[in-house]
Image (cartoon, rainbow, N blue to C red; front, side, top):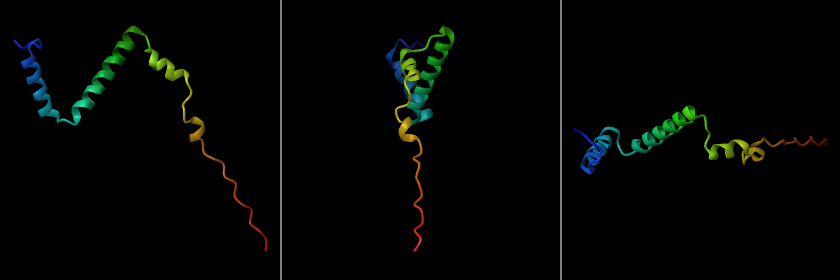
Length: 79
């Protein structure tokens, strides 16, 4: 019976995942899995984490800087 309480079993499982997905893909898989679990918990409980509430209330930092600057064309000089 495979139990994850034995450190050898955990190492064996990690080695298989490393061989299947590679070292570059494992962090991406972990972060997407974590985001999916957080989203599932939020949908079940109906609560929003405090960090997301602060981000929703505050305006974007670069909002004024990202607006396109108005440039006036110089009038041609008559000679």
